[in-house]
Every structure is written in C-alpha cells, then in structure tokens.
Image 1: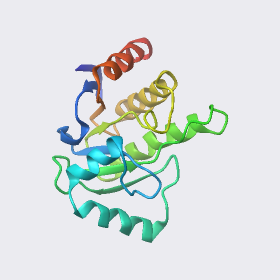
Image 2: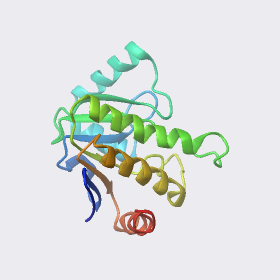
Image 3: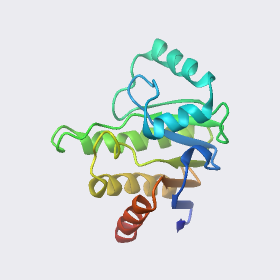
Image 4: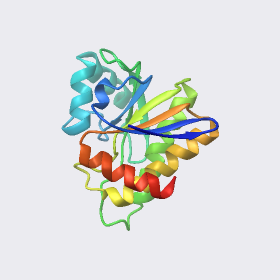
Length: 180
C-alpha cells in the first residue's frame, strides 16, 4: 500500500479485493447495461447481493444504457461500501476513437458523483484494463491524473486504486512514482 499525500487529501494505491475495500463507495468496471459480467463487475455484483441487479435494471429503464465515459450510482447493498458507482470505460480500439477522453470522463464522472453524494472515500479498479483491452501503460497516467486532480480540488478526501494482482499494483505504482 502506498499513499501520495496532498493538502486536501490522499491518493492511494493498494493490492487487494475492491469488493471488500473499506471505502464509502467502490467503483465498478461496468458494461453499458449495468448487467454484471466477469472480472471486477462480477465480483462486485456477487458481493452486493441479489438487490443490485434490480437497481441496475431500474437505472437502465429510466435513462437507457450508460455510455462509455459515464457512470451511475446505486446503494452498496450487502457490501462494506455504502455506494457502488458503475463506471463504463471505453473498449480499446487503438486510441484513435476517443478512448483517452472517454476513460478520463469515466473517472471524472465517478468522482463528480462522489462529490454530489457526499462520498469522501472511494476505491477504483483499473477501468477498461481488463476485458476492454486498454493498455495499462496508457490508462494509468489518465486515471492517476484524474484522481490526483479530484483530490487536490477536494472532490474526495481519499481516492484509491485497488489493483487485484501484485503485478498490477507494481506496474501502477511505478507509473504513479513517475507522474505524481
């Protein structure tokens, strides 16, 4: 676990299970239908329990699919976190189709939802870096830039990148040390 301290708060990196991270909100690497799936999405859906799919279907019925770069919020249900922010990152297509902007927007929109809902501590996975194929060496600077900006601005007090594997943690930490 590594913490980068700023006057208004902390940006942290840790290796662990995001579904059990002790934050007010966790961010889910969601698909546009908020339908659950594999990876982080599946872990969070299982941890939240049977009420989450109903809440997600209600959001889709009210506003339609959540496009890449956007996010929606639900209760955390059976999780430690009181809230789940479902952020939809872009599918990597070589970087020429607005992927960096959509990825930044997914982080930024999630952080804005934290601010709107009075959430002071939030944990993020590496959005789009799994099944969506976004290269970590390109995603990490975007993510860390958005998180550090939000902490400096006071949108949240603590923003954490919670990475599942030790290898992912070490990769993100190396990038963080270069840019923070």
